[in-house]
Image 1: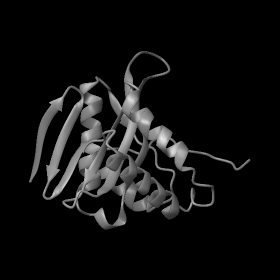
Image 2 (image 1 turned 90 degrees about the vertical axis):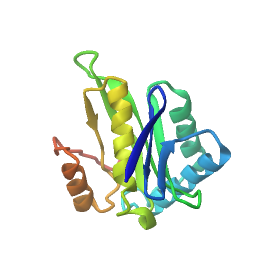
Image 3 (image 1 turned 120 degrees about the vertical axis):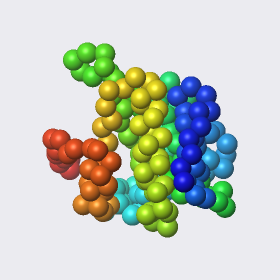
Image 4 (image 1 turned 90 degrees about the horizontal axis):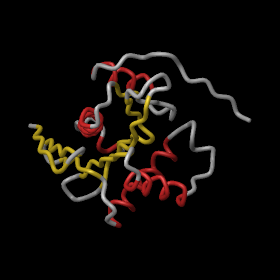
Length: 171
C-alpha cells in the first residue's frame, strides 16, 4: 500500500511496498546514484546516446535542483538503498500571467524498477510538490525516444492529455 507523510513544506514522502520515494538530498550517495541513473538514461536513449555524456553538466543540474527555490526533485530508493528512479523539475510562471506550471527536466526509472509503481509514485510526488506550490498544471516532456507509446499511455492513465508537439532539427 502507498503511504504519504509530509516531511516539511513542499515535500512529500511516498512508500510503496519496499520502494521509498523521498526528496533528493545532497548526500554523496544520492548525488552518485542520480549521476549513475543519468548515465544509464543517456545510454538507453536513442535520441541522447549519440551525443557526449558530460557528468559535470549533470552534476551541476543536480545541484541546481537542490539549491534553486523553483526546483524540486525526488528519488525512488530500492530496499537495498540503491537509487532506481529520479524526477526533477521546476515551477515557472506562464507567459501570459503569474499562474504556475510545473515541468520536468529529468524523469527516469531504471529498467529493473519499471512496472513496480516507482514511476507513478515519483510522478505523484512531483505533482504533490506542484500543488503545494500552487501550480495549476503539470506539463511533462518526453524527448528520449524510450518506449514512447508506453510512456504516453502511462501519462494518459494518470490523467494527462497529449497537447501540441515538439519539433527539433539537428544543427
